Length: 93
Image 1 (spheres, helix red, strand yellow):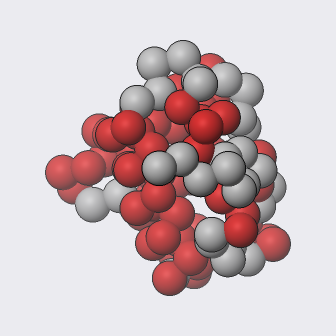
Image 2: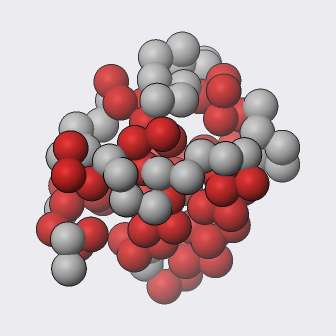
């Protein structure tokens, strides 16, 4: 089921991280998923989603309309955002 609420309603990402470049989501990827995190970030950038905050303004339906953005990308993104929420200091280094 597609959630029509923006991701910002599901994740509490500190405001000082919202202007970070979207490629920063790769920093929280574990070894085996780094490749998927990288591809997900590239797809977001091609869609002109340049920051973590801009990504959080989108809902699942909007993300799925991004060219070549698939369910795996969505699930990867959700996992990365969850890790950032749980440990925001990993992006403050």
